[in-house]
Length: 461
Image (cartoon, rainbow, N blue to C red; front, side):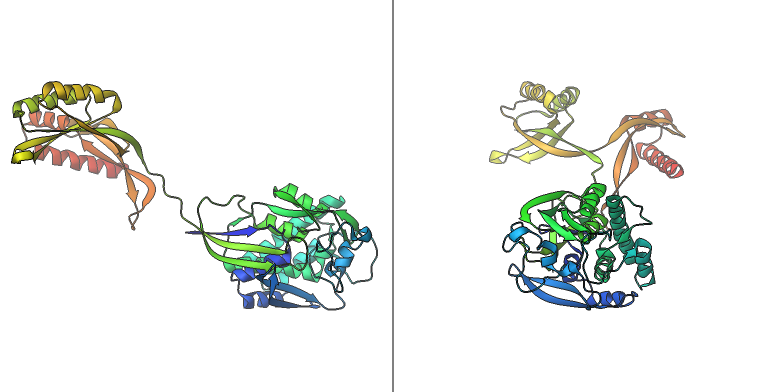
């Protein structure tokens, strides 16, 4: 079965939520810690724990910064405290009392804005990529991390009218955002997932403060990523930022499908926690789906055919021989006689006629007229028919009419491969004609013609 990762972004998506969801899905923590430790970054520690979100047990991935590297990205009052009397952020929708709630990843440029006193990194894309290149990441993890940062860089460059080479990250150039993105890449690579379905990203409303002022939600970087990568957005009636630029870039980099398959089974579920307390619980649910393999299309045609049956115990053999010829001449696809014992142990015949709908009534009339039957049973049957065509094959004995039939090819396990092979079946009339012209037996001519046809097929193949 194919394996598919489904990211259910009902509460948006962010870097830490994605890492938590992938860890909960089974990504190896030791592999992750080793990869992160190889990056030339300092000033942080990683904490992985279990937390409750809306009563659900979730994995929490926290990049804990030291005092020198701490920034406003973790401060809910900074993000939303500008709202007059907190009117834009209703109680429970983005406000915390008495403490700061952490949320790591706002992808905005350092282009001015309101001054503050926390330390910030001002890294360009080249500097970030140099950091990733020095880490001990697998080829797949490194490529994915580069892809995510490139998507972010393109979105920020467009928002601020600069180039990808000149763009300088603010929040996403900070230690915690680099760690989040690298961690997503390492976890996904560790899980061995190549196909990811993301149908929609749920986003909130209102405004959020970033390094260069107060911006509408979705922020420009998220809007640019959604536009460039055709990410479907759904705006919820809740204030607050639910899709961060890092989250949008991760979705754009990972997403390979927009629709769930019609049929699947859920192999495992992972829940990743966010750090905000908003109207919608900040959690990301990931599901590892097992999708049945698509059946190989059958190389045959399907249709329906009528089967006509009647039992006879008072009809002579001569009459039956006569009616068989008439039935075939009138369009019957096949006619069969089978001996049966009828009531009172009288020996009789089961007459079976196969035909298509246009010929059915005429064949029933013929049976009534030419036999002693007073009743005919009929049933409509589905059938499968191999594709075939009539052609003439050249043999050493002369031309012979054959039926070329397309037969499905099977693998070592007996499953169809999707390919077909051609089999040639000599027609009776052609073999009989060669028997008359050569004076040889039917079996001798049949075997010789089959051998020559098989040899010719191998030569063509």
